[in-house]
Image (cartoon, rainbow, N blue to C red; front, side):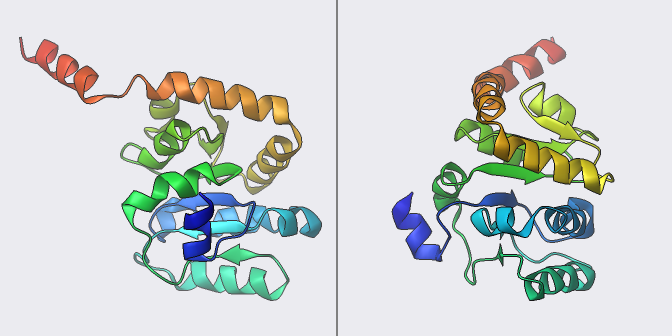
Length: 188
């Protein structure tokens, strides 16, 4: 973990978002929620954004730059992050914050859970099915709720530990073997 943090110039502690930079991922809402947190809390937990630039990014990058201008530490590695390095990046984070407006499935929350990371995610589309009760679910359009969830989990180690345990259990439900069995049963 330390070597990967060094390789990408990452801070010691951080909140993490993994996904393409595009409107449906609600990064603009995440930035807004992050800037509602006390600045000193944010300085202890910079927000790390991992993902390629997608479409309609002007507003998102404008919000990122505005927040940075106000002293909020928002970090994006200035080089491509290899998939093989993601487990260490997940494992080095304090929380995954994934307030997406829409997901076809939601792989990053499951990847985070597999790495022992507590997850905050949107309560919409396929995310509830993917994360079960192993995530702190929020309305992705409710910026204060996202902010409150971040602050609560940062201050409540017991809740973080509980989500980590539930996450390990939840992620076990998703395997190639389980998927193959479901497909086989559907076909016969």
